[in-house]
Image (tube, rainbow, N blue to C red):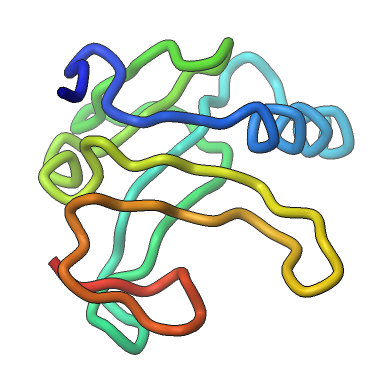
Length: 113
């Protein structure tokens, strides 16, 4: 069962990479990690992942030591998602394991729900 207090799971690999990005880009405490979706991609939706300031329509969570912000309307697509970071020979980048996705494409960043 997913804890609604922490709708997103960040793996250790994702946390390590996000900390590196924060340091390299001098991200301030005014910014949280935005997790969201937008229309587009080969399957209908693509993921949003980046540092941003909280907006009025956002919920905020503390996950893995990060302020995570998410548009309230995106929760239906993202509750229970696991965000990981792979650093291998074949793949390098953030991955999204979304239990709400009914279909995804080969790129791994596009899904339908």
